[in-house]
Amino acid sequence: MAKKDYEGVGITVHWDSDRCFHSERCVDGLPAVFDRGRRPWIDTAHSSADRIAAVIDTCPSGALSYTRTDGVAPGRRGRAAGREDRSSIAADEDWVVAGGAADVETAVTITPLRNGPLSVRGPIALQLPDGTTVIETRVQLCRCGHSGDKPRCDGSHARVGFTADGVAPGDDRS
Image (cartoon, rainbow, N blue to C red; front, side, top):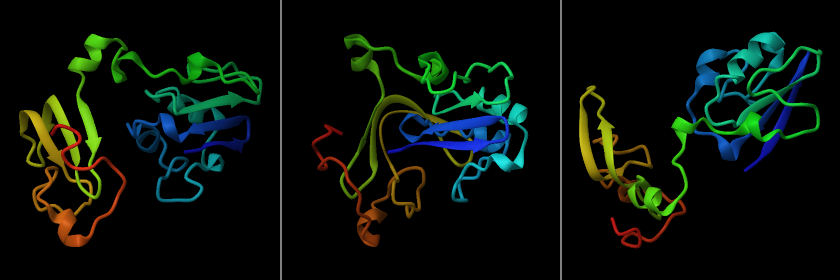
């Protein structure tokens, strides 16, 4: 995807879409600045550099970081001008699975199926729309938005002609 910079008074916001986990802490924390329905989706004119930096400091993925251009000391997601400080973009430990063969074997696997759902192999806790939680080891999650059994897939993707990249069904051992 893309890396973009959004310049404002006293702050430049750096955005790396490939790193985003969509926790929505930015959108919830400062919706006037971070609005996914607007283009560009970040508009620094709607708040102060201090408030923008405070919200970005809560980003768990490191997709958002910033450079203070007003001389104020940066927080945890701040970085020096012209530098991509690894600590400012490092994902929080509780949001990532540590590397290593044992972790890969026990990690939840999510595979987008070609023209179909997300195939998830667990164990996972799936929270349903009524608030109940069920423990699953395999589930197919709707990706087309048309399922009558959300978040599960009911096959509506075939009826509506949904198309998207992914692996061939059956290739993910689901």
